[in-house]
Amino acid sequence: MTELQPEIRNTARALIVRQERVLLLRKFSEERGEYFALPGGGQETGETLEQTIARECREEIGTEVALRDLIWVADYFRCRSTQRHLIEMVFLCEVPEHYSPHNGHHPDKHQQEVVWLHRDELASHRLSEPYLADAVTEILRPDSSSPDSMPTYLGAFHDDPVT
Image (tube, rainbow, N blue to C red):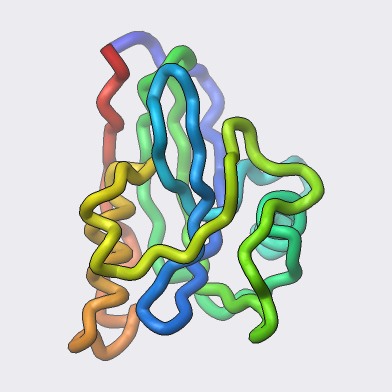
């Protein structure tokens, strides 16, 4: 593995669920092809995690969100053109009832659109973080009592470098 950048980057992401569907950013890059990601991104110096989620959601999905709970944390070693150690903090959030998916005023790099994907569709799409499919599927399971039944710390994950 190539040497990691020395700084650890905190990231905050929003898991937004409605009627067994999750709100995702559909992205495309020449290097990775099509993939899907949760809204959110890097925490800026002096910014709280709640402020990070609010800013990122306004920029990427064009709406305010109500932050409910921190549901999981993962160490994520991103192996791309720059090697990065990320601490991913995912919060359960809600959008206004009238919200219809659309790009915000400052979409994420490679962001094509914002979509709702049903839980049954997640396995057939490439998701950005390696822990995302299992964690989201667990939360959206019809017999899952609540996100509280999952461990908060999911562990360490490495993505596969594109060859």
